[in-house]
Image (cartoon, rainbow, N blue to C red; front, top):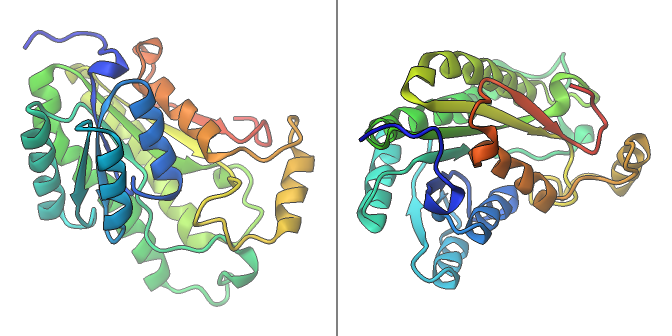
Length: 259
């Protein structure tokens, strides 16, 4: 197929990992709103994924699988292609290993172990690598690809001791940049969208209200970014307007961090 510099969002087939709940569900809704077809990956949230598939009338394929398994991810991509009759062109790496965003409950430097770090690295970096590798043949066939990784503003503003989570997301940023260099000749862009604390997702439900208030007061917009606002920013990197943007990290946190 002859490469095109871009596909409109409504011509894209999008895989959202961890797309049945939390931020992933908002991202899936945003793509559906713009007319895309969406493969919603889930690990345990079968009921939520199937509910979204029923709601979207054929434009959603619910695909169960652990992104840490290359075999499971390959099966997800094959299932999505079988459902939609064409390959996935756009991947949003959103899936996150089990994690509670409550700084008071996280291990500090004297207590955190390598097991904690390895769990996040395997899920965040290993999962993203698996999805990209599984999607590559289809993207090359289409002559077009978009990879959007979900990061964090804790790189620049490490105000809570999320050592394992932040290290894994920082590694994902490095992978974003190296993949963008490697895959650019295939007309595949690779970018990251990084948020701060979002009001509210499943992961941030444990965050004390005082923390939300403090962050809101610290931002120029005087409010905490919502998952829906964050999801809209993800669309930019799939849209034709970003066709010459790759290897970048867009921080979406109401201006708390200047990137």
